[in-house]
Structures are given as C-alpha cells and as structure tokens.
Figure 1 (spheres, rainbow, N blue to C red):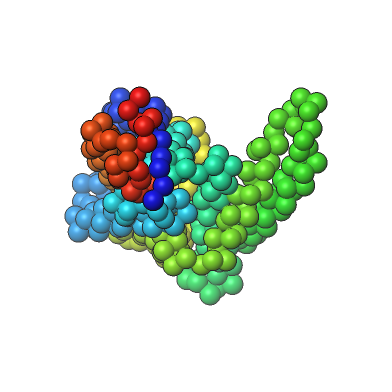
Figure 2: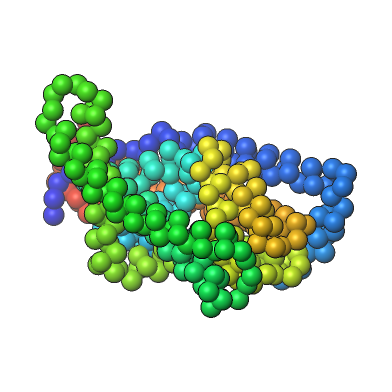
Length: 366
C-alpha cells in the first residue's frame, strides 16, 4: 500500500456559488421561453400542442433522459477512473455531465472535474491530457458513425424515411470524412510535434508542442480504447446517445405524430451541432438547428418546434438537477475524507477519493 500527500480539494471552476448561479440562469432562460410561448401572439397552435400533450409520453421521455445520464457513468469510468468505487465514479461523472447543461462549451468545470479526479490518482499531466482528448473523441465516435450509417440507410432506402440527397448523402460523407480526418489529424500532430520538440527559439510553434503532443496521443488513446473493446465503455457511449435520441422521439409522441425514427436520428445528430455555440447548454443554437433541420426533412414546423422545445427542457434540466445533486454528494464525501485526514496520524490508512486506501504521511499534518 502506497503513501500519498494530502489530496487537493475540488477545483474552483465548480464552486457551489458558480453552480448555483448557473442553475438560476438556466431556470430564468426556461421561464422566459415559457412566457414567450404563452403570451406571444401567433403561437396558438404551438400552445395547443403543449396543452394537449400526452402525460404518458412525457413520463417516458423523462425516464429515457435519466437512462442517458446514467449511461454516461460507465463510459466515463472506463476511461478516467477505473480505480475508483462506482459510487465515487457516479458522483464525478454525473456532476461533470450536469456542467454540460450549465456552462458554455460544456463548461470549464466539466473538464476540471475529470482532470481533478485523474490528478488525485497521481496521474502525470501528459497522461491527463491524453485521456481527456481521447475521451472527447470517443464520445464523438458513436454520433459520427451512426450519422454515416443513417445517412447511407436513408439514401439507399434501407431505412424508412424520405429525404433529399443533400440531407442523406452529404451528412454521411461529412461524417465519414470527420472520422478519417480525426485519425489524419493525430498523425499530422505527431509529425509536427516531433519537428518542434526540443526547439528553444521561443517561436509560437515551439510553444504549441504540448498541444500537438496531446492531440496525437489523444487520438492514439481513443483508438486503443476502441481496439480494447471494453463492454462498459461501449455500453456507456451507445446508451448515452441512443437514450437521448429516444427522448426527442418520445417528445414527438407527446405532442403529436412521430416521424420515422431514422429521420429523428439524422435530424438530432445534425441539429446538435448547435452545442458548439458559447452559451450554457447550447441554448438557442441547438433549438434552432434541430427545428431547422427537421423542417428540411419534411416535418411540420409546429410539430417540430413543439417537440424540440419539450425535448430541450427535459434534456437540459434532468442532467442539471442530477448533476447538482451529485456535486453536493461529492462535496459531502470530500468533507468526510477531510475529517478523516484531520484526525489521522502518520502511518494510518485513509480512504481517498480517486486513489483508494493510502498510508498517511507526516506532511498531512502541515
């Protein structure tokens, strides 16, 4: 059993005050949207869809979103924290996922939680960077791959649904190109990093050497994880995406007729590109992208708008609430850990989140 220095506390990026403000901000945005839909003239049909929504499908949609949140945990644990207990893995992963609904670009706090967990386990900074880049690529693999399959399926008639070549072949080609481009980017980054490694001229390219190294090693890490084929990783990656897509499908069922699942699937994957906008949870960009692409696929504007807005309320609030609760639980766990450290003596065995059982050192009393 190894000794360890006193572990570091949670990063400031996920402070309680910042999380609380983000929850209030998200709630205010949703309240404003409800007021606009309720009071703005010309939206009578939209209000009627919400008024006659079928409760059973609302319950189904919420349950599916809970499953999506839970599916994130095994994927996160398979890459980041196999040494942790499942309870600690759940708290960190779900708190990180909740940050994606609360902060722009998924939030610095979201990334900070994963990095914090790895650093607590004693992982070197270079390995932290490699795993972070690899995990980002892994969470993109399933959406990109399924977009290619669905696009080809719709174009060839294998899957039910009608759409133009522009909306089937082009997304499939872009998805296939993105997968090939990610691998090529890793190789290119490796070559650039080797060229500038050791240069001391202070050039911008030399300063970016660690970035190129992280990109190259992140691609290698993603490919290694895929070749290893951890069932928990695949269960998490597929479940995280598929359950969320079915939330959108169930939202259609709640407010009216649902289109073919392949259309919902393709529209979801393309519309979610709005998440890249620098606003909390991609608010505004995702809604506009989803509604616009679904209308292009031939859906009625009122039906698409009602379903997307309902889906977004569920997709934002359930991860945010679960994440906030997990964050509170994680802080409580760390307080118990801190109390155990404060009363321990050098040589005592203490359970540390992210590390496991370690032997306290004299420096812990400092």
